[in-house]
Each structure stands twice: as structure tokens, then as C-alpha cells.
Image (cartoon, rainbow, N blue to C red; front, side, top):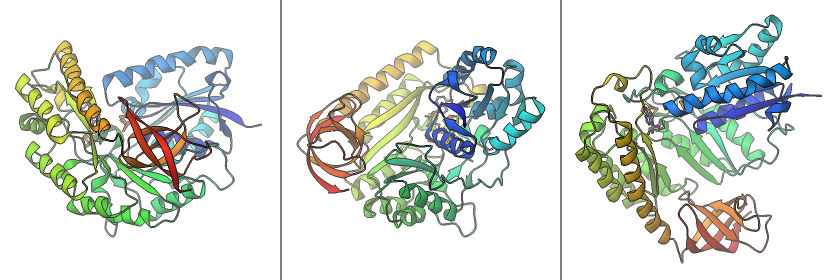
Length: 448
Ligand code: SAH
Ligand code: SF4
Ligand code: F3S
């Protein structure tokens, strides 16, 4: 009988993708379980982008300490960005941890387990090589570790970041930008569509600079076109785009390639040029707005979403007001907003004029309030329209309804005459707008 592995994942989509890779790497020896109590191996794949998720790691690992008393053979490992950041320290702080594997180190999980089983000593692997070759990890044809596979799947096309925004720990924990060879990416996409995946989400900290450091690599817009030529790929999404590298060619591909979804996540971070400069974002709000205008004029239906940080050191009330003004100008479909959080290694951590916690909290609430109204107005504008929805499965709230997304990435729950439409693209008439989703009625199946 196979042993069991439980993986708890924190953080971004790249971490989710890394977790899938670990399941595949371990699949000869371990099968996934959702219950840590019955696991032989527990892995915590961690995030350190803000202080809060990092703290969660310690409480999460603490929960498994007692399981080790019951089962002395249980192996506990920490992977991901906190593992990368803390390395050996984690073993000192948490002596019952057996493996610490960083953001490149997790690729060697099988070797690490072998060493651990032989030596019974903690294994730490947190080397970060700027020329690391990401191994190609494909789920074999008859492998069924992802039993009910989702309609959409992540494919990491590049990892790391060279931008060094002054608040951000990612360049330190993911290393320098490395693009994966296009052949590997295409092979991975082909394997996924054979498993029934219809939507591919290309991932990178900064997808717009894909391939630029390599000789003979396609650039990102070319890569999008290459992925779209694979039969079986119906939709392509990507995240994240840094505004400074958003090329006209990319806008053109979004406008003209029917498989590329009409949605872009374009992190603004702040609306004041003074703060953008302190953040080392390398663009001004005028530049950002010009890109948005271009996007809207060539792709009128485009949905734009963003990330914002409130309370960056030195952010005055006037600076903050400029962020609110940007919300009104751009009219995002949705935003992800965060209170500035001090991170180790970063430049901003050492800056003066830190904003008090209560003030950051107030600004965050204000941002939420302004955006809630905009999202509501945008969602209401869908009512009465017919939209194409890629069906993901049963609706979470109501199992008699189906759930899917529009090309603009809005969730639609809808009634349909049959419920076995997972993976189909259907036409839905929108009847009602909620705060976080739309409601509608099935009209017809376009593709299945
Ligand atoms: N590569 C992406 C973002 C990765 S981190 C990009 O450049 O857009 C995801 C988001 O976390 C960031 O966009 C930012 O809004 C937020 N974030 C990063 N560091 C942070 C910090 N120190 N405090 C608060 N939010 C932070
Ligand atoms: Fe962090 Fe900036 Fe790189 Fe994004 S672009 S990962 S925010 S340093
Ligand atoms: Fe977190 Fe690492 Fe992603 S810090 S946001 S898991 S790249």
C-alpha cells in the first residue's frame, strides 16, 4: 500500500502549482490525503509576502507536533518561501521539523526524503541558483493523483523577479527571474489538455518579461500565441503583468487572439507618483493610465484587476487620496488590497515615516468602500447581457446550479437543464448581480 502525504498550501498561485508538482514527484511512493491525522508525510508549503501569512506557518506546524508523538515515523517538512527565507533557523525554532526545502529545493524532495530516511537527521536545501534549470514534471498518462481534475490548470512559465520593489521579499525568496524553455511549457500544456483541462493559466511573478533574458526564446506575446495553437486549449489566462513591461504587442494579442481571455491583472500598488517612486515601481500614474486607455480602446470589454498597498512608509493623506482617485479613473472589476507590512531584507523596512496600524486599517477600509461601489456598478452592467461561461462545476452555494467564469473572470452561478456540463462553454443570460458574482440562466451550449 502507498504511504500518504498531506500538503497544506499558503500563498499565491505559484505555490499552488508547486504543490501539484510535489504531488507528482511523490506519486510513486505517496498518495494524497486530505486528513493530516492519517498522513506519513506532512508538508507545509509556505508564503512570506506579508508578516501575517508567515506567522500562520508557525501555528500551522505547531498543530502537527502532537501527531508526531502518536506516530514517530511521521515526517514533517516545510517548503516554499518561508523555508527559503529561514533555512536552518526553522530547524532551530521547530526541532520536530525534518525537511526544509526552498523554492528551488522542493524539486529535490525525493532525494531529501531518501537522505532523511537514511540519516534521520534534518535535511535543509535552500540554495538559489540564478541559472537553475527547472525540471520538467509531467503527470503520467495513467496517473490519477488529481482525481476530479479542474477545468483550468496553472502552468508556471517563469520564476523569480529582478524588479526589487522596495517593499517586496519575493526577489529574495524566489531568486532571479528564470524563464522556462518554451518546449517544456508547451509539453506541459499538451499533457494537461489530454487530461481534460480547457483553460491554461500561465504564471510568473512578472510574465511580461518572459524570455527577455534568454537568446532564442519567444517573448511573452509570442508565447501566448504558441500556447493558443495547441488544440484542446480553449482559454488562456496569465498573471502577473508588471505595468512597466506591458507592451503594445501584448495588448494586440489580447485584442486579437480569441483564446486569450479579456482580463488583465495589472498591479498598480499606489496612485501617487511620490509613493510609486519610493516603491521603485518604475512607472508613473500617467504612464499607467495611458496603458489602461490603450487596453480599453483596443479591447473594449476588458476587465482590469489590481493589487494595492495602503500605508506605505511616508504615504500622506494626499498620497492616499490619489490611490482612491485611480480607482475611480481605472474602474477595476476587482482589487486585492493590503496593508503595508515590513519584510526582512527589503529597503522599505528601513524607511522612516512608518504609518500607524490603525491608520493603515482605516485606509484599507476606505479603499474597500470605494471599490465595493465600483464593482457593484460594473457587475450591474452585466444584467440583461448574454455572456460565454466556461463551466467549472457545481455552484458552491447551491448544488442544483452550475458555476463558471466569463472571459472577464467574473464568477457566474446559473440554472441549467442538466448538470453534467463541466468543461463546456455555454451561453448564459445574466439575471442578477451580486457583490462577488453574477446569477443567470443557461441559454445554450456553444462548445463541449
Ligand atoms: N509579482 C507580482 C506580485 C507578487 S506579491 C507583482 O509584481 O505584481 C502580491 C502582492 O502582494 C503585491 O502585488 C503587493 O500588492 C503585495 N505585497 C507585496 N509585498 C508586500 C508588503 N511588504 N506589504 C504589503 N503588501 C505586499
Ligand atoms: Fe515583488 Fe515587485 Fe517583483 Fe512583484 S515585481 S514580485 S511586487 S519585487
Ligand atoms: Fe508568497 Fe512566495 Fe507567492 S512569498 S506570494 S508564496 S512567491
